[in-house]
Every structure is written in structure tokens, then in C-alpha cells.
Image (cartoon, rainbow, N blue to C red; front, side):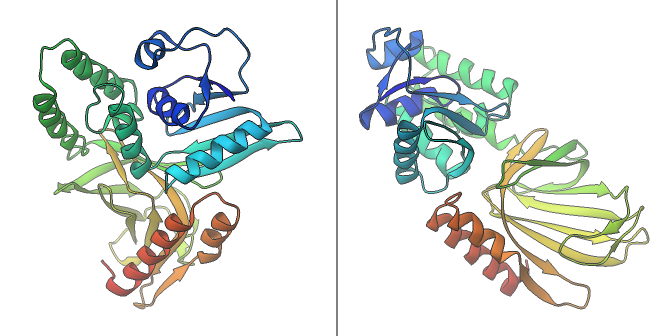
Length: 316
């Protein structure tokens, strides 16, 4: 089973898949150095590349090989998001999303091969600026200019600074389990502390608030509260005059903080808090559907369900 692997996850995935019996062909220079590979200029059975937003990989190739590869990855990672874009008798294309826990395991895999800063893949997925920061830090260690222990400590401190700054304008990147992206904002960070932020957005359209079933009016505003790596965000809606309209808890994969955005995969199930103080869990059937379609694992399904039940009881 011959693979061509490119992108920010390539070293970690090569380590995992070589250990599972796959062969890497047309390796990059770094892949040859790290794994002792030779340049086999033959056609691959499957190709792995990054998605444009860097939070997914795309696997394209022979159906049987893609199926085996996907199964191996599903067994290794507990929280993957697996989407089938195309499938016929001979070929397949799969998108595989990496939430935070998967990125941690990717870091562990990569560190078995070469020095890897903490939060390596988390930062790589955050854009070119953060990706360059990772490369610079790891190069300093590889050249012997900074010890691994010292760099680990410095880098951990640097990542803590990713919490969006007070007063900054950021986006909320909400990735659906069908692969679609909903980008909310820009919103303004109006509160920041203890790796938690509150983001204010003005409502510019009318209609009905999803899940709450109450009128949405121009002039309303929303305040979204998010804490780094929590599996939920809370958005409270208010009228122009400040009257509370309701709150919506979105259950998601651990929230990633970047200087200009927060990012997560929506797990479909939600909790709503109505003005009459009624609290209810909604859209559980969508979570169940994602599990039945093998988009998410049983463990991620259980985590999402337990999180929704906890919120409905505690009302944080």
C-alpha cells in the first residue's frame, strides 16, 4: 500500500502509517532524512494532503487502500471527524478532521521522529504566521542553540498568549459535520481572563433564532462566551434595549484559540435556555445520525451527550 504524503501533518502521519505497514513513495527531503527512505518514483495508491483551512486532511486514491488507512486512523485517534466526499467501485476521497485531542496524539507521533514543540499541530493549523513560529523554534533546537527543555517552557508560555486580546476583532469559525464552515463575526472581544473570552456581535438581520424559536431583530446583539479547550460555547441574545432573549449552548470539540479567531467542530447537539427559564437539549438526533454514519466515534458521541446533559443540569 503505497502513499504519497504532503502537508503539516506529514511527519506524524508517516510515522503512524509506516508502523502500520504502509510504504511512503516520492518522499520529501525531510521524510527521507527522518525515516531513511529512498525516492521511489512510482504511482501511489493514495495521496494525503492538507485541506485549505489546515484542520482537515484529504485522502484520495484506491478504494480499498483508503478504507484500510481510514480504519487504522479511526482505531488510533478517538476524536476524528471523517467525511466521505466521493466513493465509487474503485476510488474514494475522504476528508479527516483533527480536533484538539487528535492533534495532541499527532504531536506525540512526530516527537518520536524529531524534536517537536508543544502544540505543534495546533499552531500549524492556525495559519502561516504561527506555522513559521513553530519552524523557527524547532530549528533553534535542532541547531543546538536552545535546549529542548528550555524551548518547551518558552513555547508553552507563548501559546498562552494566543487568547484573543481585549478589544480585538475576531471570527468564530464553526465547522459543521458535513464539512461546511460557518464564520460568525467579526465580533469584538469585550472580556478576557483565565483563558476565557466574551465576544460581542451585532445582529444585522431579522428572522428566528435557531433552536430558541424567538424573533431575531436588527439591533439585537449576541455575547458568545468561550473558554479554551472547553467542549461548549454559550451565546446569549439580547434585544437592542438589553432585554435577555435566550441563550444557546453549542456542544463542540475542544475550542481552539488563535489571535484572530476561535475554531471548533460543531457536534450538532445543543442546549437552549429560554427566557421562561426552561432548559432543554435539542438536535440529539443529529448527533446520533453523525455516529450512525461513522462521521464520529462512539467515544466522541458519548462525550458530546454527557456534555449536553451536564450543561442542562448546571446551566453555567
